[in-house]
Length: 525
Length: 56
Image 1 (cartoon, each protein chain N blue to C red):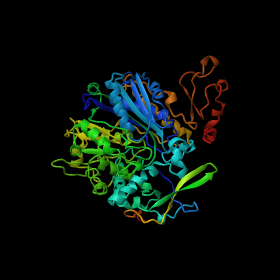
Image 2 (cartoon, rainbow over the protein chains, first blue to last red):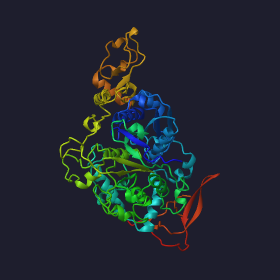
Image 3 (spheres, helix red, strand yellow):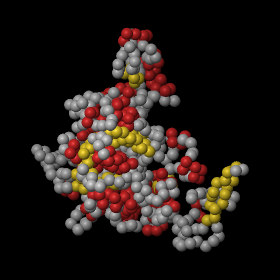
Image 4 (cartoon, helix red, strand yellow):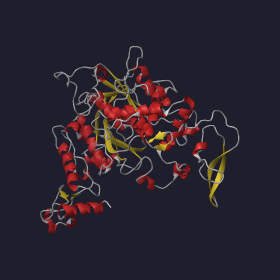
C-alpha cells in the first residue's frame, strides 16, 4: 500500500471554553468547536462533508451536530472510546478521504467531563448499571481510570526505582506551561512539594498526579494536502498515525507482562515507520497527561529515553519549554503547553497545533508573569512549515526552520493571536440568567462574522445553551397568525413577550428578573 | 484477576501489610447462597523476589 505520509493535513482547530460548569449541552459545545475549526481553516459548510466523534454515551452524535452547521454529510461515524481515539479518528478520516467517501472531515469530542460524566465514575456515570467488564471490577471498588492504571505505575516504581518526586516534575512542567496558556483552566503553578502534599487518590497517585476533568469541546479538521493549499492556515502535515493500539489485553492489561509496558511500545513502530523518522528527529512532543506517570511511560515507550529511565528523564527539565537535549546536532524541547484537559487527546493537541501554526507565541504569559519569555530556543521551535505526526495518545510534531512573518514588527512579529483569544466570552454563571444570555449573545456575535466564514451559517438558536437552567427558550413553531412570535426568536426569561397573553406556554417566563432567577433555580433542582 | 486483600474474617487488610512480592491465597467471600466474590488473604509462605511497598 502506498504511503500516506504528508498526504493529509490538519487544517483547522476549534475549541470551547474549558470550565467546570459549562451549563451547556454537548451538542451546543460541539457546534461551537466545529464552527470555530471551520472558520479557523477558512472552510464553509459545503466544504465539509465528513464528521466523526468518539464518546462513551456522554456526548452528541456527529450527524446531529452537522445539520446545525448547515453541513450535509457524505460520511459520519461515532465510535466508542476515549484517550487515543483522537488519533484513531484522524487515521480513519484519512482512510475515508483516501477511499473517496468524503473530502474533508471534522473530528470533534464534546463532553461535560466535570459537571456531568466524570471519568472517575462519579456523576452521571455512577448511575449506570454494573455490567460487562464492570462486573469483574466494580464489585471490588475498582471503577476509575486511576485505579485501572495504578498497577502499571506502581510496578514501574518497583522495578526501576522511579519515585513520586520524579514524576511530580511532569505536573510541575505542565503547570508552568499552562500558566502561559490563556485558555488553560488551571493557571496556578505547582511545585513538587505541592504534588507530594496533595491527598492520595489511589496510590501511587496523588491528586495533582491526576489531570483535571473539564467541560469542553474540541475539533480538528482533516483534509488532503492538495485541498489544504487553498486554505487559510499553514497545514500541519500528518506524517504517521496510530490509535487504539493495544497490549494483548485491554480489560486486564496488567495480566500480560511486562506490567510496565504501555501500548506506545507497539505504536512507535507504526508511526515512526510511516513517518520514516526516529525519535532523534523529533523537535517537539506532546503527551497525554492523564496522569503524570502516563507522560513518563509514553516517552519511554516511544523511545525518547530507555525503558526504566523515564523518571530521570522527566525530572531532568527536558520536558519543559526551552528544555534541550543533544542528539547529535539536534535539539529537542518536548511538551509545549498542555494541561487543560479533559477531552483526552484533543485538548493538548489544539495547543500544539496553534503553536505549530505560529498562532500563539509560546512565550506569551500572564500579565504579571515572572517567568521570562521564551528566547531564541523557543523561537526556533516556531515552525515555518509544520509537520505533524499523530501517534497513539499524543501528537508529535516535526518542525522546520523558523521564518519571521513578513511585514511584522520585531518583538511581536510572530505573534498572531487566535480569534478566540481576542474575543472575550463572558464567564458562565449558572445562577444568573442575564449572564447566561450575555454568553449566548457573545457566541452569536462570533458567529455573525460572515466575512470570516463565507457560506457558513451562524450558530442556530437550538445550538445555543440548551441546559434546563438556561434562561432562553427556543420558540419554533409559534405562529404570528395566532398572535405569537415566529421563527428563531428567543424568549428570554425576565423579558415579557410582546403579547404575553397570547403566547402559549411562556407564562412562567414573565414576571421580571427575580421571578426568572427563581424559575431557573427551580428548573435546576 | 483482581480482588481486595482482606483478613481471614473478610475485613480489609491493614495497608502496612500490603506489598509487592508477598504471597496471597484466593478465598471466596460468600455474598449470598449462590454468589461469592473472590478475594485475597496473605499467607505465611515466604515471598518470591523482593518485597516492596510504596514509601510513606
